Length: 464
Image 1 (cartoon, rainbow, N blue to C red):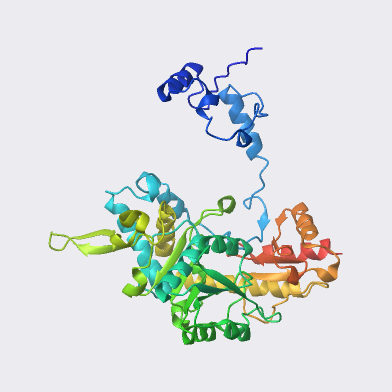
Image 2: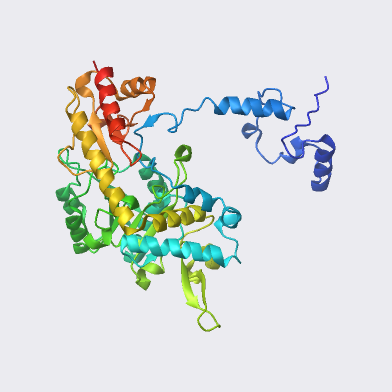
């Protein structure tokens, strides 16, 4: 029986005559001959089990709208999810500016001749540098995970060593990305954290340090929401062994917490998502890396850096790449790391946010976040059966809640909260088995006192 010919309205080149013309151009008699060099075991035999195409545009819109309407987002529901992607208030001006055509379009976030975009990214880097109290900040990488992995590779190149120490209290997803990026030439050793305080175990760190260690990586605040109050000691121990201190930081915390450079951080990295960027179903993200203006460090940045310089016209300045010759754009296959598309649009967005907030705004939001976090911790600690493992340690926006004594699993608690139109916290039971049935709860400035009270009251009800 002759196979039915389908011309799909939304798939390019599906017209049979167009397919035939393309095959003639490449010298193949059929689709099967075109793909002949791919082993048969890797090719699907038969047809895909797909429904009939919707040929009417009205039908298609109705179908897609029906799928989208099944979503339940943080706009309709109260959310206490965090763990790396946060629901902060996004000022309308951030969306207004990053949707402008001058910034929104073009590969890699910047057409090569557009100096206005270069200036916007230079301003972002300058404000991030002020926030971090460091001299040099890159054009954003894909995300904070990549920034962490790249920062560690930079540390290995700078020190000439091939072992890095990573804490066990970091995100499993981040560790997976870092591990894959450092393979096969850089080794990793994990460092435990203290079970009572959640802070890095300094005795384990001291025992792990030797002449092979290139970098000690730690986070402040940590993935579990704690402030690493031993940051000075960690950096001092790393430096005494000839290693660098690489610090992961949430930039929105820096209005109230010392920047890492002030406690010995040599390379600082993180994600700019908290700075005026929506959650976007897990996005959008951009990774930053920062160092001081030391050529030994600057020349190891694989990503682009924008600077300002005088032009041939007196009193006029231009913006563009700094030390372009160190990038893979210039060195190609001889580059230290390959760098392609950047998250430059999110850098511009974060720059708008920082300019709007100003120094005092960053102080106020940081104070408000810590106050909300401690308030909710106190409310939940008073509920019978709940335990907050690291209660005595200072926190920023997130904290761990354990449900072992309630007889309910973290998944059951989250399911009960969903039934009450609340997204609970990140389930840690698989990621951190030693913490038992626990959730990582997150607050932000969008939460009112009534929101925090509602969560506490709802938890008290569902745990009865």
